[in-house]
Length: 295
Image 1 (cartoon, rainbow, N blue to C red):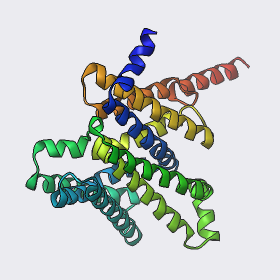
Image 2 (image 1 turned 45 degrees about the horizontal axis):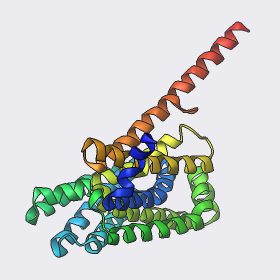
Image 3 (image 1 turned 90 degrees about the vertical axis):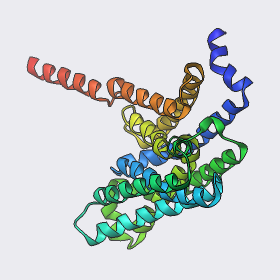
Image 4 (image 1 turned 45 degrees about the vertical axis):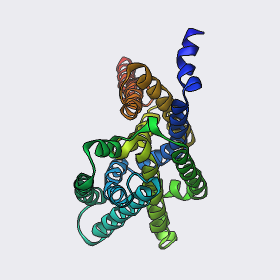
């Protein structure tokens, strides 16, 4: 009973903890599947690039309307889409790969965003934008994140088969359906940007990608099947939010970094102990080699 009290009491007795948990759960529901598909498409670092790319738009929204969630969200979405479109355009016209063009744009975006915030804001405002204020989430932010999560899940359900085919055999789509892969790719990146915009209010522009990618890459160490990977990633995301908020509450540390650190610890455990993790694979290879030697 004592353990159950420690696990539940902060959420039962404190409204701000409940709101933070609901917001993080909603974000986990929509962002972890996107992280899985980013990982399958070998675009894991693109999520990180886009999380930095939204900062100038968020900063412009902040300069125009203060800490208005709607203004910063719209600005961040436009900025993220602009970087995604420009990166794709540069990739199609030059010898640069997509990851290289994303790197070039997101580094400039990050510097521009920090500069814009510093023009009128304080260091506290900058920290809020970069690292989030999950314990200060209000009902408006929860509705905003919940709406984005709903739209994302509906779009993923409609695009599920196309995303699978594109992830494993993009050449098939390019040969058989002209123009369709570009549309799917553009819609997918738009969903990624949309979820990063939802996440910046909770975890900040620098931390939001952690809840998207860490559960996804950890889940791949436990399952080799896509449905299983999606389910495990979702469970890891929910667990990271729960444990991270409890860790923050009892240890008096920032909540956003605590959630991402929890997801990081689960990732390291998965790498070491997961059936498809490095340690387990080394043991299997060792026993397989030893068995062949005995024969």
